[in-house]
Image (tube, rainbow, N blue to C red):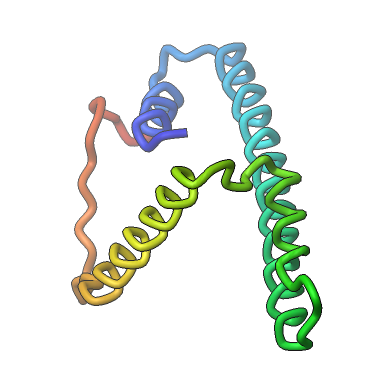
Length: 132
C-alpha cells in the first residue's frame, strides 16, 4: 500500500460522515491486505534462505575441492527457472551484475546524513478537526 493510500484512509476515518459499516469494510480490506503481505514476505524469505543456503554450500564445496562445487547453486537457480540459457543471456547477466556493483559502490560512497535535531512534520490532505 502506498503512502497516499494510507493518507486517504486516514482522511476517510477522520471524516465525521463515515459510517460504521464503511469502517468495518475498510478494516476487513486492511486485514486481507496484511495477510497477503505476510504471505508474500514468507515466500520471499523462503526463496532467500534457499538461495543463501545454496550459495554457502557452493563456497564450502569449492573450499573442500568437491568435483562440482556449483551443483548446489545450479540446482537452486534451475528450480526457479533462472539459469542463463545462452551466451547472450550470460553476457547480459554479467553486465547487469557489474552495473549493480557500481551502483552499490556509488550509494555507499554518498550516504546522505540525516539532519539532527527536531523533525518537522508536514500535514497534507483534507482539513481535519480535532475532537474536543
